[in-house]
Amino acid sequence: MFRVEKQEYVNKTFRLPLELVQTLEQVAQKEKVSMNQLVVQCCNYALQNLEEPEKKEKNGGGA
Image (cartoon, rainbow, N blue to C red; front, side, top):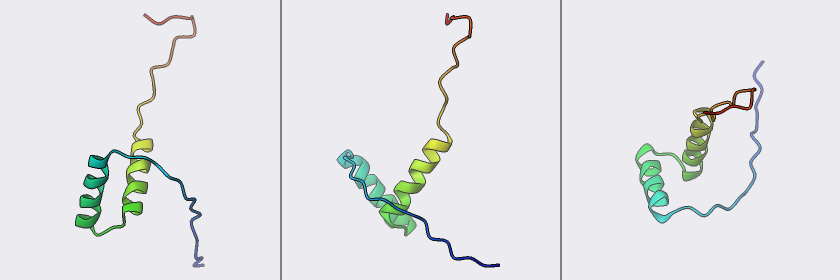
Protein backbone atom coordinates (compact mmCIF):
# COMPACT_ATOMS: atom_id res chain seq x y z
CA MET A 1 0.00 0.00 0.00
CA PHE A 2 1.25 3.48 -0.83
CA ARG A 3 2.30 5.50 2.19
CA VAL A 4 3.35 9.15 2.10
CA GLU A 5 6.50 9.60 4.14
CA LYS A 6 7.82 12.88 5.41
CA GLN A 7 11.49 13.28 6.17
CA GLU A 8 12.32 15.24 9.30
CA TYR A 9 14.72 18.16 8.91
CA VAL A 10 16.50 20.39 11.38
CA ASN A 11 18.00 23.83 10.79
CA LYS A 12 21.72 24.24 11.47
CA THR A 13 24.17 26.97 10.58
CA PHE A 14 27.56 26.12 9.11
CA ARG A 15 30.41 28.38 8.07
CA LEU A 16 31.75 27.34 4.69
CA PRO A 17 34.58 28.77 2.61
CA LEU A 18 33.35 31.26 0.01
CA GLU A 19 34.86 29.31 -2.90
CA LEU A 20 33.09 26.12 -1.78
CA VAL A 21 29.74 27.90 -1.58
CA GLN A 22 30.24 29.41 -5.03
CA THR A 23 31.08 26.01 -6.49
CA LEU A 24 28.07 24.41 -4.80
CA GLU A 25 25.83 27.17 -6.18
CA GLN A 26 27.14 26.57 -9.70
CA VAL A 27 26.62 22.81 -9.47
CA ALA A 28 23.15 23.19 -7.95
CA GLN A 29 22.13 25.59 -10.70
CA LYS A 30 23.57 23.38 -13.44
CA GLU A 31 21.86 20.26 -12.07
CA LYS A 32 18.62 22.12 -11.30
CA VAL A 33 18.49 21.13 -7.64
CA SER A 34 18.35 23.23 -4.50
CA MET A 35 21.52 24.02 -2.59
CA ASN A 36 20.05 22.12 0.35
CA GLN A 37 19.47 18.99 -1.73
CA LEU A 38 23.00 19.17 -3.13
CA VAL A 39 24.62 19.62 0.29
CA VAL A 40 22.61 16.72 1.74
CA GLN A 41 23.64 14.47 -1.16
CA CYS A 42 27.30 15.52 -0.84
CA CYS A 43 27.33 14.87 2.91
CA ASN A 44 25.62 11.48 2.53
CA TYR A 45 28.08 10.45 -0.19
CA ALA A 46 31.07 11.56 1.87
CA LEU A 47 29.87 9.67 4.95
CA GLN A 48 29.09 6.50 2.98
CA ASN A 49 32.56 6.60 1.43
CA LEU A 50 34.48 7.63 4.52
CA GLU A 51 37.72 5.73 4.96
CA GLU A 52 37.97 4.05 8.33
CA PRO A 53 41.22 4.61 10.19
CA GLU A 54 43.48 1.57 10.27
CA LYS A 55 42.59 -0.63 13.20
CA LYS A 56 45.32 -0.90 15.80
CA GLU A 57 46.51 -4.39 16.56
CA LYS A 58 45.19 -5.82 19.83
CA ASN A 59 48.74 -6.54 21.01
CA GLY A 60 49.32 -2.85 21.55
CA GLY A 61 51.21 -2.57 18.43
CA GLY A 62 51.42 -0.16 15.64
CA ALA A 63 54.64 -0.15 13.69
